[in-house]
Length: 194
Length: 309
Ligand code: SF4
Ligand code: SF4
View (cartoon, rainbow over the protein chains, first blue to last red):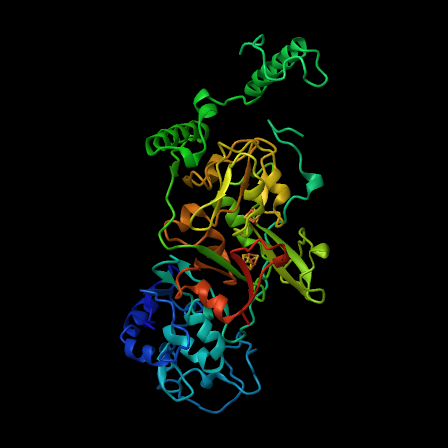
């Protein structure tokens, strides 16, 4: 399955620093492939190029190393209540999970698999796929989540985190668009017959 | 027409006293025809004489497209392209909708209206989303089409969008008395709006409520017009004809996903080529729990529902 580290089509609102960093992260194709070399009992659809928009960071937080530079703040691997990032409410198995299960202690600009392997934020799907294997399998073939583009050619993917906030992954409810006009309220318009 | 010419039932027609009755009938018929033509309003002679799309030669089609583009330009004040993209070889379209994911947000309904130039007033919508209770399962009798809570999904409910199922044994096609609707080789059931006589038999025959009639002159603001159109799809329709979902024929025959699949925020909508074993749609059919709506009617839809979880 030719799922490469996605070419980044950077969304406009992202910071310039982010664009630079993500550009750098593109040098990891071999690693990204490693994660998806899963035995496929069904041939995966051929998608020539799969692009995703940049990971949806909160404004101004990335690169994390601008604060977590290993000097001004000493890395502390102990599980504890944080004084920072209080806006994050962990609703993703909070009993058994905390920050450093997914964020790398030594390199905050990377994520970390259970094996200890570091991966870039653009490959976060590998991290999600460790536990949600069935969703990962469906996502790879375009069944979980959406694809846009061409049904017979180039498509765009979204990352898991575009729809599911990793800290509280439940899909957020939406305001529905207006319902149809009920039959009794339909009035003939100009030129219309009753 | 020569009313004095002896006809086959001259003198023996039931209820008639020979020629005078027949003459009256013919006079009435001629008057009726004149009335019908007058009632057609802006219908040009060219348009009135136009034959069924499937019988037209290439150069005739070109002339018709030019005429339509001119008409639309005059009506909407901007250039409109009317295409006739043909079905692709080895392609039969199929659609699958994930009932476990749809949250009933109706993004698809409104994206479809915009993409396919549906009349805003009187309102026509090709997609209808039904809200049903999880406890009752798929129970159309108790479905709510007009739900409007602050947010969806509502607790204890699930949502089932319905649109044309592009039936392989389409009752709508079978009943059309004039052959104005048919199934294309890529499996899309289309309507020739210039051939449709507005009898609405197809609407009565369709078990999915997928066909819609232009009771009034369709109101479509020029600013919202989608100018990329297909003759058998989303070109602006006249009053008095039936229309329906065409899997976005103007998009999908160019390789694009339908507008409803592109907009869906939950990724519930899957589309592709049923003949391609590597397509997303085939993956769904082979690996998921799939069901057909009103399967017992043997319409053999190419629109499937599945449970993605
Ligand atoms: S846009 Fe998607 S989630 Fe929303 S109603 Fe349509 S199918 Fe359901
Ligand atoms: S769903 Fe209705 S309109 Fe569509 S093909 Fe079947 S019978 Fe015809």
